[in-house]
Length: 302
Image (cartoon, rainbow, N blue to C red; front, top):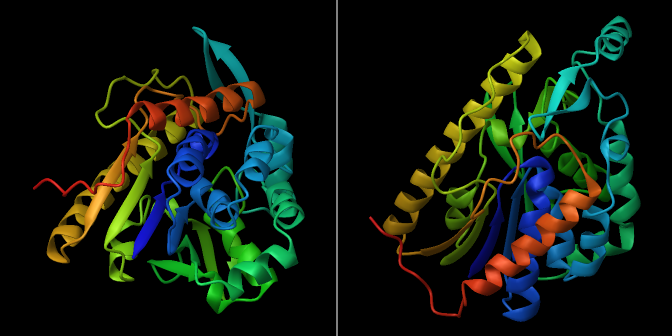
C-alpha cells in the first residue's frame, strides 16, 4: 500500500503541488492513501482525483483576500524579503466583534466549497482511495485524523478548512463541542499515521529544507516575536514527526522517500503571492524531475 503525505507550510504548498505533479503525472504513481496537514490538506483531494491542472490553477491564483476575510497583518518589504506587520485597526475591530483570534479565514472556507464540488466528493468517496486531513483538537489536547470515508460533504469541507487555520492569525473553529485549529500544531507531517493505516511505502513532501540554513530576522514588535515563536514550534514539531515516522517505518518494515525543499522558499508562509507561487510550483516539478526518481524504493536510514 502506497501513501502520499504532504506537510503543512502555507503558501509553500505550491512547491508540494509541483512535486506531486511529477510523481503522479510523470512517474504514474498510484497511491492508496493521501494524507495532508494544513496546506497539504488543500492539495490531497484534487491529487487523489488526479486533477493536477485544476489544483495548480487554484494554488497559483490565490492572494491574501482569497484566504482572509479579516487579515490581521500588512505585508511589507524589508531587505528584499516579504515581512508582516500587525494591522492594528483590523485586529482591534476583530476583537471588538468578539473574535477569539486576530484574524479570520472565512474566505478560505468559501473557496474550499467552491473548488471541491459535491460530485468530486462523491467520486472520491466511492473510490478505493482514502483522503485524510489532520486537525488539532485543543479542547481534548489531541491530534485527530479525519477520513473522507467517515463524513458528509459539508463536514469534510469543514475539516479541510480547520486543518489550515493557523491560529491566532486565522479562525478558531468550534465544532462538535470542541475548539479546533491547524493540524500542524499536533502533526506537521503525518507519516506515522500513514504507516499505522497500512502504508508500506510513503512519499513524504516536506515543505522545509532538510537542514536549517537561515537565521530569522530580529523581532521588531510583539507581533513579530509571536510569529517567530510559532515558526520555531512548528519546525520542532516537524522534526519530531519525521523522527517518529522513520522509527515507525523501521518497526513496520516500511520505506519512505523524502522530498524536502532544496532551498529556502520563504520565512513568511502566510504571504500569498501569485507570481511567487507559480514559480514555486515550477520549482517543485523541476526539483522532483532532477532527482531522476524511479520506482525503486529507498530504505529508511537508521
